[in-house]
Image 1: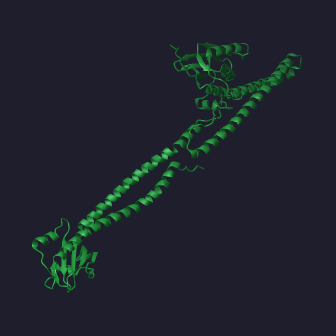
Image 2 (image 1 turned 90 degrees about the vertical axis):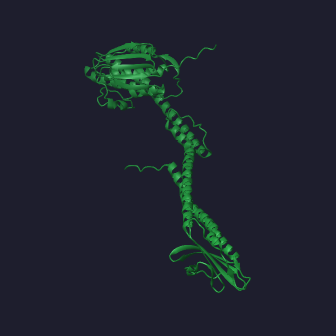
Length: 464
């Protein structure tokens, strides 16, 4: 069953951060819009009230009856507006028209009469047109005159649209800015966690040193937990290496003695019918001794206390291995040759001899009868190298990565190997910071196992 995709912590934090923002911004934007619209409406209403007060100042009550005289010039001034039509009406206490547009008496809804000094603001309709009205009550001696001033809503509607678009535009810009700032802040806040993940990704059983990065206070307990885990893993890995080394060491002596006893038994007078049995016993003991030696080499390759920074020459290592193999009984027809050149490098001589031993043994075991095996070494701009080439059946390219894993053998492999030789060689190569590659032979069929090491660092310049 496919695993469901995991949600991103960064996206989750961003979502929870944006949720209140997406809720609060429309509410705050609406409140701001209403506040600004109300202020603008009040300013425009004050303009209408000023017109009404101007008309109120023109009422004359000295003759006992209220009168008002508005010149044509003043009438044009009172009605002047670039966007809207302005109407006004002055009524006597008895409801008689003293001045202005008599049609304002037909307003719907009709506003109530205002007491002296009181003002009414409201939206009304006049013959299908929407108007804004200010009605002022003015003391006229014998009663209260009513002064009505109204105008159409063109500039008010335009102002509302402008306010709305401005609030929406600024709110959107603010939301975008806050979203970018929040995303950046979350990335910066999670950067230590990302760095910790990257550091853990490069850890393995060979690198269990404590984490020492400076982390925020919230991540210190996690760092401490990982360090305790590394400590436990280090102890477990050390115990495993010690067990392998001790077991291999304890097995080598009795297996060697048993091999010697079998060989002596084969030399003594005995019934020839048991020869096949003795030969099989000897082969099993040799294989067990080889396996014990490989387990010991594996434990040494994983020992982090071994110094792999010593100056060595791969040619010397290959020469010593050649001298050792010269005293061994090679299978019939196997030709082992050496083509050696100077190859300085940094490493551990014993581990590299183990690597070469496993490569040669692997070639001898699997190349078949009449095999030609060549050991070469040299150096170049990219560092020193060591390779073992044979003309055997080789390993298919698709199976080569798996062949360097422990207890894995190629599908066409013959012989009695355990599948540890190439794995040990690969571990030793990695321990030295190099790489082991399985390549095609230079010519014809076969396999070429090549070790590549980093070049030597330059010698420090002598002091002046």
